[in-house]
Length: 228
Image 1: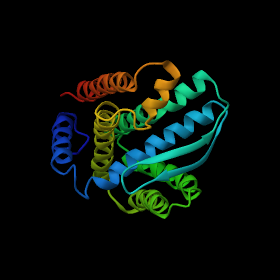
Image 2: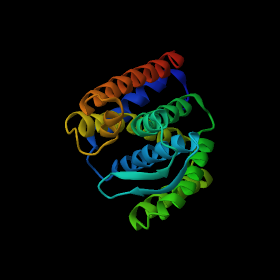
Image 3: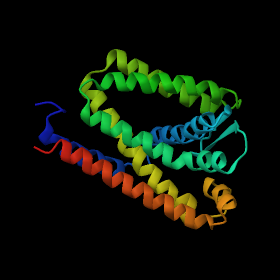
């Protein structure tokens, strides 16, 4: 019996979701919340690059926040897509990690790739001159590489599912807290609101609906593909 046995996948996912809920405001989950912020800011930067821009610096703060400073040729679509990439991009990466963790039998190599990406990302965090964010990004990336070298595939399977589930859950909660409960605070939705003329709370609701639909599809896909 292994973690990749199909009939046990749903049980593991339920247990992990329960752990996430019980320990949401503890140090156990705190580093993973910062990881989601890293995904969020990285997604802004990657979308800027896709539109011909470049990443200047990234900041990750102790308050589980951050920003990505980038240069880009201004246009409606470049601004719209880059501004929208943060929340939805981090949800995409979290969902991808969860799907790969469920489907793959070589989870340690997924951990390795994530570790390398975080080490590369720490360079842009370093450009902000902010020590906390740099040390957390580099440290988490280094942990991934150490885990790849020394930890069992059993650990990697649980670890990646843990990362994937928390990433998806946190994005949904973050959208609700930042964009719906507290609008007009200088968020990504406020920037999109200025472009489209729609109220930022409406942008937040649209993103929330998209996030919930994506999460439903991902969990349904994971369950169906591994149903006994």
